[in-house]
Image (cartoon, rainbow, N blue to C red):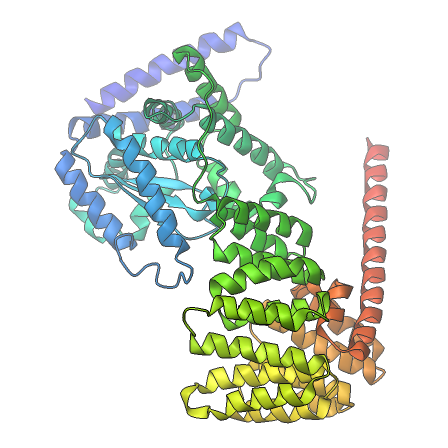
Length: 595
């Protein structure tokens, strides 16, 4: 029977192709349509028995639950490394929106659950048999409204409700001549089946029905349209070989081009999907309605801001952070990020407000450290009074000992820089002398802070002694080693300084390692080496090209050397850019002459 059905479809298709070719004789004849027809015929013929032997809803629930378990979706510890708790917040929100949509499904026995895949490079969503819907963090990063999210979830729900997901699994197993029992060992390979997408007809069906589901629950149809227009633009940018910096892909910052390619390869063209959705809206007569805010958008704006900051796009990063803080004023991560981005941009004055918000909300040592450093640059005469007031406000009800002590350290350090050396040193030493109640790590951190303030005050000998003591306590602590190298190089001890950088593993630490070596080389008249090392530092972290940031963090003598290195690095980059532009222009002229 299966062979007869396939033969009949194939004969009809070939006849149709024959008449189409005759009707349009100017079109070149190609074997491709026949090959596509044969492939589609075999696939559809294979699916006929699958539709007749579809598993029950309860068995599908069991299959989906097992695959979800093997993929790790049901592991309660899968977000243990998410220190901010953002992943849990996102997943809870996914379920709140998803459960608004599920009353619209036809198969009520399917038990839906909505999961976050916290991989920022997963620009996709997929549905497992039995109602487990997974949304990648990379895809969520592209959304701007809850209505857009509803259209995504409605699309994936349809893949389950209309049987696409279980049929896809049945088809894959049948093609390999396996029984359904094999799903128990599939795990991640099974998930990859669903990530790869469906037939064009099924994807368009999921768009249409998913949109119906979302609108029926009060969401604006314009959410789906807005998202598909964004995809259409991104698809055009991704496929453009002459794509330039500043395009929508770069503006998103967090999403890689490869991730977008994978999404577009597993779905029909965005323009076609957009036209089908608009046709559905027109046929249903749905009016344009206001869209709802995406309640977790602050998290993704902060993700984007962090990526932009890492790339040295400080103005854009600051803009994203401000959007995130405006949407969620209690979101500590946005305030910390904004303070850090303002500081890295070199603007100490603009750092003060977000640093104050971070210190009052977070009350951690790093918060007080940045606030103190910003205040001493922005308002040196009022810095200690402002800082003391904020510190007392933060701990008025409860003195969290380590955090309060960290703040007290910063206050004393500010006094040292302002010339109150005796009072500052005595206070800091008194706190350190309490000894046993603090961990070695905390004591070392506070010693580094004391040494930094000594360094900024020009007390290099005292700074070196403090750092040497801290280095003995924790000899592998990279920040202490680098800070000691900066002190040594200012003291003229270049050999000691060159031994101190600790080869940090993070890009920021690797940048600092190379910046230290560049300054040492400049001071020992090895200028070519200095320029190469500084070039590497700037590749790891563009902040080394910001003059005011350097001035705010280092001694005048070191800042002067780095300023010269910045000038030479910018001149080198300008020359490279001019050479590339000239080469491109010559290549275009050569191409035109050949044509």
